[in-house]
Amino acid sequence: MKTLVIIPSRLSATRLPGKPLLKINNISIISHVYKRATEANIGEVIVAAEDQEIIDDVKKNGGNAILTRKNHKTGTDRIYEAFKKLDLNNVDLIMNLQGDEPNIDIEDIINLNTQMQNSKANIGTLASIISDNKMLDNENVVKVITEVILETNNFPKALNFKRKINEIKNNIYHHLGIYCYSVQALENFVNLQQSENEIKNRLEQLRALDNQQTINVALANSSPIGVDTMEDYLAIKKIMEYK
Image (cartoon, rainbow, N blue to C red; front, side, top):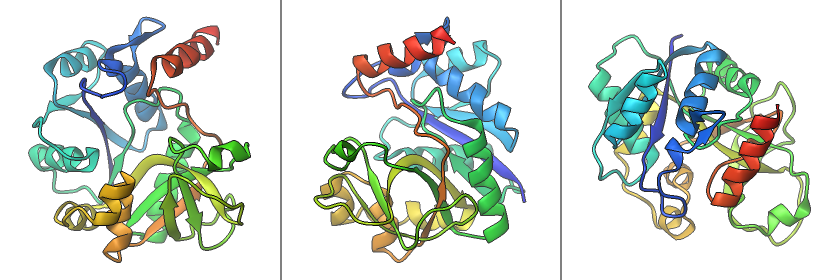
């Protein structure tokens, strides 16, 4: 089975405009993510961006990128446009990597791809152990509830995704925003209307569950730091530059 990795990216993030081009070790965040994806060596990697500056930066750093429309509601819609533009016939799986997680674990990318290849699942994602119960209350940390306990080699279904959880229960994990779709599942997903649940909770994965599309979850080694604020950027810059 052949996998294509697409990384959606845009400069107009509300909380930290221009973040894909912020530099760590003189390389932009988006180019760091691209490098991690290529090092995972699971298939061709493309950045799908709405800004020419991102395209230019990725290409300057030796990567591949494609320009997409500006009016997409979600990153999934953006990767689907890129996939259609590329016009590739022999792709089985499409992985959607977040463009703002420059320290994502390469082994986690490989693991999700392997689980998808072995299970013939429609949609797969990653989650990590919650190390601090304060995360349950933090709306910026998305939680996933799985049908059974996550282990290194299993790939259970997600029952729900929540921003806030009021009580500690079993099988609650920190959801990481990386997805892998079969081509058919991606096409089905982007053709669905946004669900009320999705809009209310600002979680596009709820659109899949609301329409009986199953999402399977693999256990990640670690939680990458997503860059949403200037504080996040300075923290991850310090970690990556210190190494």
